[in-house]
Image (tube, rainbow, N blue to C red):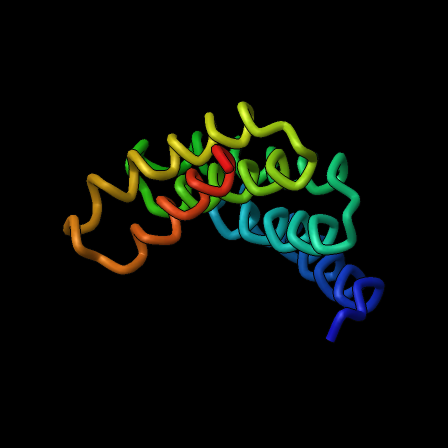
Length: 125
């Protein structure tokens, strides 16, 4: 709906509850940070988006195995922010990390891989 202030309000309530209910390295806390980062990304506030996406990534790196799909999501999201900012080499770095995880987890003809190849192509373009 594009109502970013409302979205942030609800995501911040979610984060507040999640912080109280779960351990600091719980993957659900990373999801809360990731959702807030997504709103800031949609708003074009890329520094805030990176701040929240990086919090999510730090938790996921501690809590999950190195080949977990949620890590690929974090890398991809951070890559997207750098792409939006015009820092294509940084975007490419994160897109490639995401792709490596997905290539190990999925068969070579899986449609989800197309998204990651597209993102890399977008950065080169």
